Image 1 (cartoon, rainbow, N blue to C red):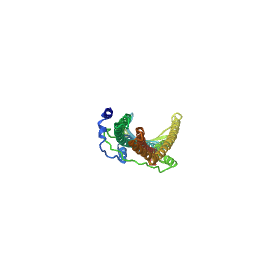
Image 2: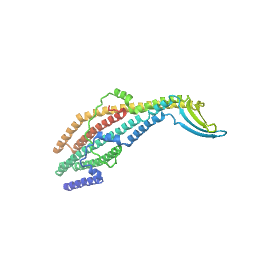
Image 3: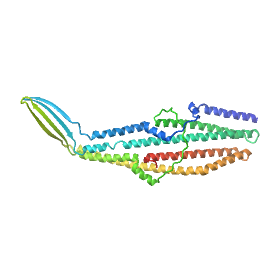
Image 4: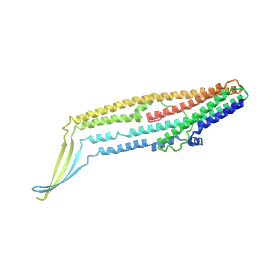
Length: 414
């Protein structure tokens, strides 16, 4: 009867493996082959050169630079030709040039110069931060697969031990079935991790502007990057150099220049016209000079309202600056706290929890071999160690992701 039960258990395990792994796609099988090691620095360089969002922001910046000389240049002149034949016949020709009131062209150039540089820098930092987060998430998936694979082998050893003990009447069939159930759960978890791995690879390829089918290597071991500044120092850096904040500050500066320009619209623009003519009847030449002045006659409904509009836009930009600063201060504090928490947990897990869980598992293995520890205790020891190892690498990844978000906020490495 015991042999029949053992044969049924082996068939159950085989069936579980076929069901859970039979549906795996070709890429997950190919993923078991050795892969090249990813280099984060090269990925960042490739993203900076090829990412469509970064390239679009760079083109907007270059386009804004081309606007400056356009708005600072005088309006195109006019050339006039005419012919008059009433009593006398005259040929006429002339030249006209509009001249804005002094200071208007300079202000228009200053407004245009504050357009898109900070937006480009902010976009670049945002894309690189997303790339780093996906890279570290992929690292966690690889480490999780490594840990779960290792524990799968241990579970298979546990199953063999349980079956041997069951065969001689020193263990129950429940121990064997529990081991087989955990093996099936491990296989299901590996299938989920494989799917997550491929999704992250596709996300990284998207950020690099590659095909989602392009291959990527494995990520190397990572280390916890310590913060070199206190929170107060990071706040000072935020005020001075954050592209996300500077972009809104430029909007306020542009608002100030727009107010100054709107006030200049109260002053008249000028137009100089020169005419030459030739009287065919008298066979004489002559010339005429004229100065035109554009009078802001309807200032109550145009110029004055334009100044009010400029003031309102400037106040809107100032409030947006305040809102984005408050948001960045929150994000700065939140990520610093996450970094500090992760550092503490990594130290505790490395120095205390994992060594203790490892000793507990070794003790449980020895005890189960001689019958002093039940199978459930042995299994719980293994699963506890597994979760602690996964938590360690998860906290290391969360630490590095928080540092990447700080780099995005500050514009530099904290």
